Length: 600
Image 1 (cartoon, rainbow, N blue to C red):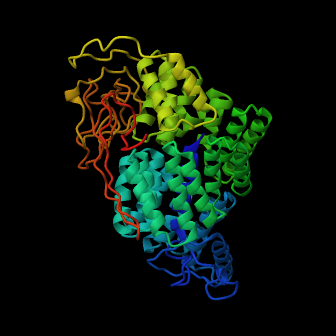
Image 2: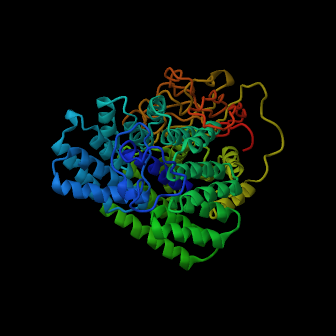
Image 3: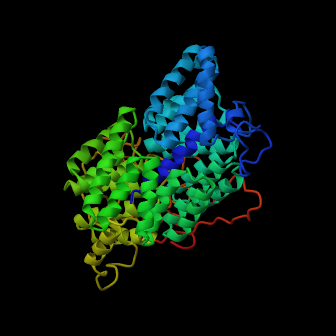
């Protein structure tokens, strides 16, 4: 299933929540986890107003509705109140994000731009800049989001609320090094649950699973209201799901929904896990409930694929039609749903149409690992496996341990006759999470069986001199080129060095100076220059461009690399036992992704 989209929705909730954090607060001293006061009494939604505070507790949905109504009334009387325009626009962004109320986004943009007209950014109106940056993230316009967030950060570098939008913009552009840098600054300025939740997402993207879990647990412990705790619990559930533990995931989602029944992303996540447990009726119930309240295209696509896996083609087509309708409505209000539409076309529609959509995203500089994986898969489904492989490598080599990414790469390699790497990646997909998709997991099992067992006999040589000489020609758009031989052990990066897609010179397709050396399959790939035209990167003979981690100690734990040292989780939650986070050395075979101690 398309679990990446569900995580994106959850992170968007975190980012949107920072907009009214610091301006929409509860009455001081009241525990939001206690029963809510009666309407009209002190502390009721109608009595809460804007107030700058360092505690930063975001509003619940009823508080948000009350705030919007109150600001609209005020602005009818005081139309030149720039602060109120910024607050109203920010509240609209959060409403649109949390309820898929796409019509709220044009209202948000109008209010935020009106705020800048009344009080320009140069005069200190950072709140409006942050609001517009977060609106751009919600619309998945990551180039605009980064420009606006960087303006806000430059203007007020110590204002932590500007950093969540910057982190997500960098993630959407595939600039994970910049995302980590922004996240480090954020956690130095603020240790609340929003910052911890975003840190967990950044760690997860790099494959640092124990660090991600530690940050997510701390976010649960530091949450001060039901909405915050529900988001943090959903994140814990997502991490459990990724480990292939659907029952543990369901328990986390249950807890989230008991605290916040209107936290609809947890319903969709729980549906996915319930399907893995064979509880299909319960899964359909949750998908339906989520779609009634939060009609996101990715939810409809997941529900459709579950129906299709059960042979219910009519129901599946109904969900796919709902997906297209929802994406069209989102597009009418400036929301970019090209990624989910491309994924749908690749598997259920026209693969060439998927390639066109996703290449357009790539050309817009939306070069996340999600887009790389989707574009590679669309090319493969369109019969262009050689062009697909560099994108699949880009997706798997960044660090995230995604069974979907590993499966896609394995199928592409199988088509190209790269039986060893194909067997390795197909097995990895099932090892990470044997339930990762009701449609694709059975296909992964069949593909692995079709490859059969490894041939008899050992390696051709045992001296360390042997090289994998299989090569594939790419189209250059993703640093394709000719696949280079695997480097000898002495050439492999040390802990902290930038590996094939590390913190050094690029992440593969069109990422600055590119990257070269070995990938997780044991076959190297040349990088590209900044234009993405396929020029060979320095070191294409098998050494790694990327220096030594650019002053950091965070190399990827890709092909035979040593995993990064454990990061100290910020904001240890009160009452929680300290966790010892250690990262094991990955196997020398170079299975893609970073090593995670304990169970796989």
